[in-house]
Length: 417
Image 1 (cartoon, rainbow, N blue to C red):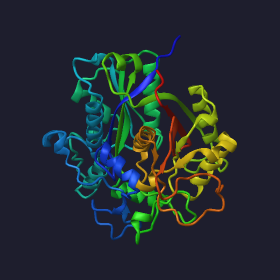
Image 2: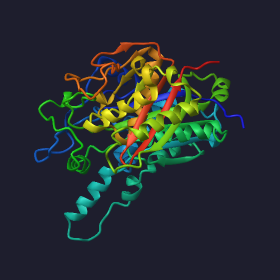
Image 3: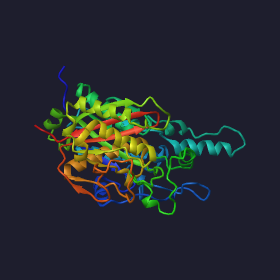
Image 4: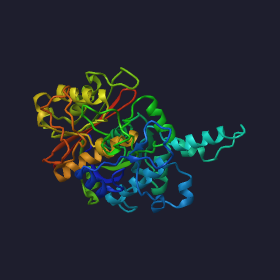
């Protein structure tokens, strides 16, 4: 069977450093941090008092107030990012068959705020089980692609992938495979998350996963730095329109790049910690290169998972050295989480977009907040520290890993006719 080619024809982003693609890209290149004190609730008794919140978001710019009340924030974010991507791709009723347009979305948690608020409200009452009739439909992780589908009339495959922080990368790989197997013409993919809540922050704090650099939030996310002390929780959404190449050409679509391949693996090691030698990460990058039919020396740029945790950053860079050997020092490696924080299930979406835009503009965004060298990290690796670097990029990879040992990697390449 001849596999079909898949391209990216639309992008949309709602992030802690920009509420659309242009704002997001400008902030990435300038090295802007999205971390700041939390505004959603009183943090006086909380260990970590800051996060990377989405700022100046007005849901009524996308949907009416009544409909918005029936959605958790993670679904509202999904609508916002997907609408930008759909508009960017110039998809209309006339140029697509909506029965062959799907939505495959990622969310690691889903409607956490809805779940938290409903249960806290019940606990504060007299024991009578009074719950909002929209409690379940607002909370369940699959509801975001359902809303995107219903809003736009897309009748193709519609579901959510849940693999913790690898969720939206898994969604992209599924979308890629559906299209190249000829089962769809277009799929809206990516992911969203809205876990900056009392429960979300408290839960990650209890695991000692979050930075507690409350005196300097904007510098707290510091991947690869020797003084890193945990990740910074972020929120938002990233959306991509994937499309079969000939279909895109036939309707005259703008094409950002081609999806070259995708890979998955499992650490099979620990609930939350990565394998110290990066065995699962080695496997996922090798699987991706094999799927794309590419050699390691063809890769120019890697947007790492790079969460700013003491164990994870070192293990990932060890894996890159193992896969790419001497060529590793020629790759521009970065972590955009230094600016956006960690968007959990949405991380793969916004980081894939960052990789695609880096390829388009020939600029690699920096890994900010690096001040102290970690002697466990090979000094020959180019981690794109503190300042963006100009670089022609023909092939870029985006790594995303999740609790439970879930690993996913997506490879993008410049389109060749």
